[in-house]
Length: 263
Image 1: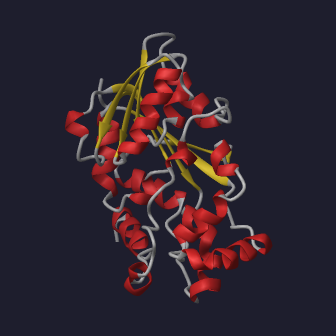
Image 2 (image 1 turned 90 degrees about the horizontal axis):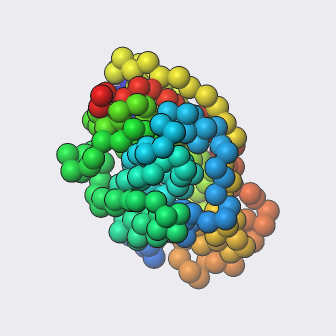
């Protein structure tokens, strides 16, 4: 089996049973915009930021952030970046991204849509960043190819060492009696790059700092209820569970850097 097929097969195993999805108050795959917003807790000194910053020219550089959220990856590169492009399916995320760019006094362009569907309408950039998105992409080959085609200098992609939803596997077992998968992993992603004959350099780095909102009391309970498809009437039960069981967060993230093809 090809590495890309194995990647898709493992992601398909994360499907939630229909009977659980049907009673959920909100989609377990949705995200709280404030969690991804640029704030005073933005760490500009991560290994991923340093790798991307080294690829930018001293001035006038551009960054394309695919799956940008509120822009934490792109804005960590300002300066020296002077133009940031954000692609995201969520209009709320793009509004947060644009607001962060305005606050940083940097030119920006927000492009709504799913990558690589909007790739043809997206400008090239010196550096393409893509943080914590790959595990959401089952058809991974065209996704990676479009990243490469849009980078003049390099692509810098970050994924947790394991699928981030593994953090909730214990809770899924507790509340629903379900055994959840554990793959794919960063090594599976590396295998896909090898299959595509992409010569990538790979590093490990500690899990980056959370946004102030994500670290705030009460946010974890709301996130758990959404991720686990639990209704509001189970809030007390979820709160009690989390007081005794911290989610098994993936503490190490992998950074991949490879050369772009945009010229």
